[in-house]
Length: 367
Image (cartoon, rainbow, N blue to C red; front, side, top):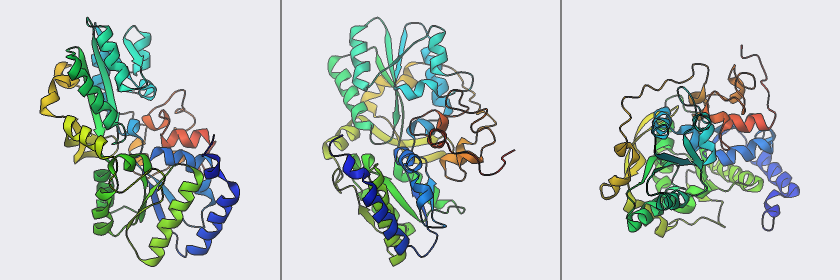
């Protein structure tokens, strides 16, 4: 693809690796926040080519994976109701809930549909005025503007049969929560380029200053990540803790102010539960009071939910970087992309799925 191959040049990759080996004098630990970055690191074997002792810690950067089990159970309870069309992105259909998943629910007769944009759900609502159309809205700041525009469009059309089940999460509070953990080993972050394309990087500057950790805004191609790692290591070696931007072709400090305005208009910041991390204050978005009529959680009373995680799944430890997928006794045997026990093996951004796709196997017995 034009303008993409240049970021996958093996000669430049080797030069960056050589420079990294010359620069690093200590076994630094760097966390990439985004699941897309994780997949590139693992698929290309970059994490295994780093200088001896240096380690990438895979963070909670998969929005599907951090969506709380209660939200999934609520979505399935709503989808099971007659007259409801529940819409979602494809990854969400196979994420296990307490008892089943949306794909299995669809096989049993529920009207669950894959959409490629939230506006598709708005169009469905306009085309089916006799049905309730619900969009399961998950994601980081990256997808919030499109979801905000969908709500604004539904309001302009006066649609009374469209609603969203919102489970948006925000990246900076999760980084802070990880750094506040006394067992945290993270010494620098690679921030997600697509999140920063929307939000800019000013939110990371207080984190870098308070915790004295470098933060490098990074793209998703091999050379992006190698350069981002090198920039982070240079800061660590020099004793600096700043926010730097590797992803200059897509990100500026202020971000996309028009997108930010749409998000602020439609949503408000709220506390949010993260799968594997727990409840974090001011770490999510919910619909603002003016648009609460589009809130599916308010519209559909599904009663008390009792979510129960699979006891074998160690998704929480994987999402916080405390363990690798290959540390899980079920990895690759009782838990596979075809029969997942947890979200990290399902999502296209999940760490377990990345390891499995790359053919990574346990280096020791996990029995």
